[in-house]
Length: 191
Image 1: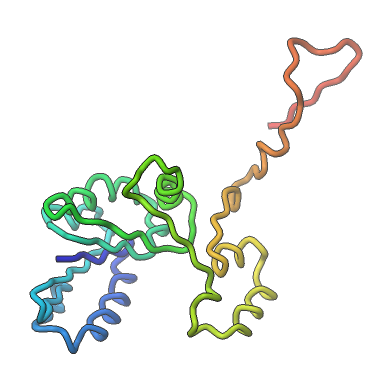
Image 2 (image 1 turned 45 degrees about the vertical axis):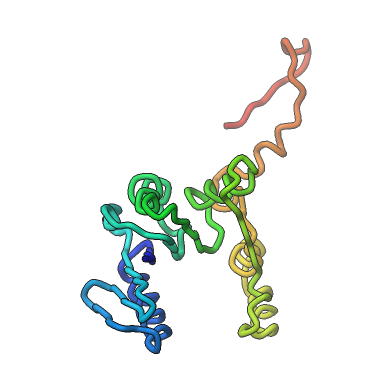
């Protein structure tokens, strides 16, 4: 059994329709109301939105795919409190798919990159790896979009300081620590 999870019902509806249509040749039964597909292989896929957060409670999955994970402002709470427990019975796994965003998604990416979790992995792929996207479209986007937006949306690069009021603070903090001020010097601090 598998679960497909989206941040909102609206996003879920788009993914639901696409997967339902794609799997039609392998489908035994479909429940539009429950967003559930039963396959001829005896597998099942259920789709949920995280609008309420607890929608997956009580389920048992071998795999959960969280689509647009970076758009869920409560992703860590949803992962720890609702999604992760659904994987226990089958020792299942979860895939978090998203454009790179700060917040819970970025924290999960950092967990995977840290090497402290043997069972976590991080992958990124730029839009240019998609054979169905024309190179000219990517070139046009590079021309039309701000550099940080293009890097995030088309190069799959996480942008640590984008969107913050104070950016590059650590890089700008170059003063050496002193036990006290020097006589005759004026010191200015901006906050």
